[in-house]
Length: 153
Image 1 (spheres, rainbow, N blue to C red):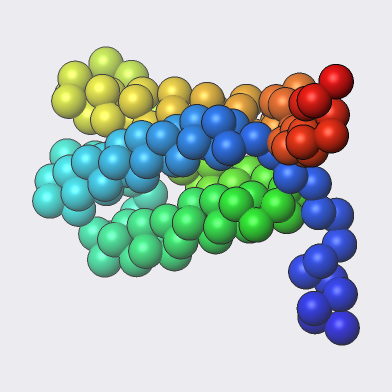
Image 2 (cartoon, helix red, strand yellow):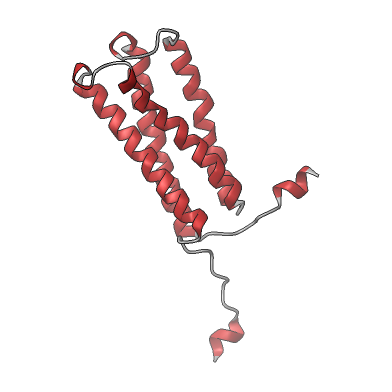
């Protein structure tokens, strides 16, 4: 049963599209590393809800980041729909960074923190757009390799 579920909806995309996705994911993960490390190290400077602490922030990064790897792994194996869903979840988790603005006025937050938030949010938004393009079929699917017979003509 699990095997059948995993093998539903197989639709390959091109190697180039997978490479673009990989680099976009690398950029997203690097941005989250910088932001989350800064958030944990300078936790008192970040606007946060009263119930949140540095350990929870750190733990959340370790929960969300494997979603990027899992989504990419699924897409590499041509489970495009499932991979896209997982990557949407990763991007949504990354966009939670905008929640900092709910807990403090914009101008009370340091420029460094704004930079980390904006870079992470922009890359997450770029990931959502690219994943939507993949899922919609706008990003070219893999083309079958032409056989020798079709090349001889």
